[in-house]
Image 1: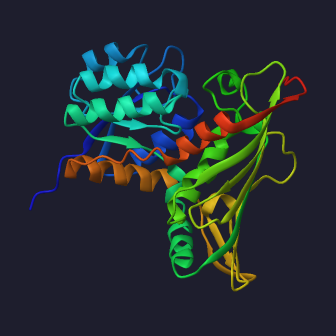
Image 2 (image 1 turned 90 degrees about the vertical axis):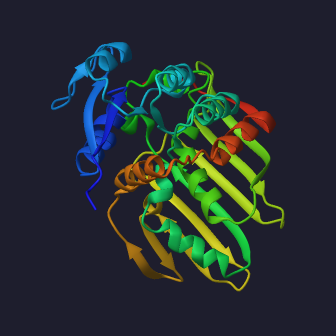
Length: 312
């Protein structure tokens, strides 16, 4: 049987996440071909770049799928435009600024028979599935997320992240929620949230969530965008039998009762793009918005606390 022709992909948005993750992941997969990208300003080396989506598609009508790597506030409009041209859609996380926008994108793609992927890259971290299997065999006592990083280091100059729809600390925090909703068998329910919002911003810079599930499981999350020194992307889980599991470094390391079981390098986007290609070949979509729903619920029930002015 002849091998399938590589899937031809275009990028909308050529910023840091596109350069760090999307471009090398696409180029590293022989089943994919990066044809071109578009951005009003960015011109990364080795990529044919155009100022607009229209210009890119006019020059490269062969493009079959589009990865949207823009800030979430404008993804709904862009996705609708892409779908209208008959192309499959890869949505960088979070998939949109609101649940309504995300659902509209999914429904529009479905109506056109196109694939849409809500790309929760952290679910493809090497220790996530092993954690899911460990949990499936046990009754849990508690889950504690600690997700703390330095916004000035990881998101320099990205003012949109603290604007309405930018999600603030939930932009990285939603990665932990994508893992949480993958590894737990029950739906997660937000009970309370403290949202620390700088007085000159519209999105939280720190947050503490109290959550549960239908079994009454104790689930807590601590998020901090002002972490200096060691950065922390960990989930601590204890079973009712007293066993302790730590999923750390964003899901790349797994330790159970002080024994290291998995410690691998990050390769999330490679797995994510392989998943996208398989979905398109199979005529399917993967549009799970559970992590976004938790953020939305935290915003609904959250207690807003004034935090000091944020100055980059």
